Image (cartoon, rainbow, N blue to C red; front, side):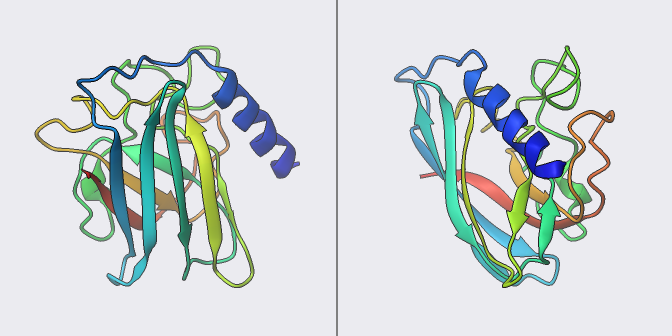
Length: 171
């Protein structure tokens, strides 16, 4: 049942109204992802598009299974990554794709890691821009959680511990 929800959430995410990307915004950014023991697990590249932000990259060294995947409000990744704060939510929306008043700008579909610990990430977050709210004084980070996000529970989708984190830096 989880893959159906993930597919449904992605369809909702892609069809959501896009935020404008104007010339004053950053065009590309990166998040160097690391596990709680500071092991490099890969890099995610964020590209501004007219439809939102495309996030792409290959990650490795993760536990197999389905994991919550979010942009968090603070650009600090000190294990156990509570330093990254809550989900990035500049519009004070509810968490998840299922509530009518959701999602947060930082809510993204779960990632499914293979038995080899690797995952290729390619998703579009149409609620996100590479704007000044993402690159404010305390920045923002991408966090991978131990368990899948249920796309509904408030405030964070019951995704569990934070197992990897990367600060989002403009290129």
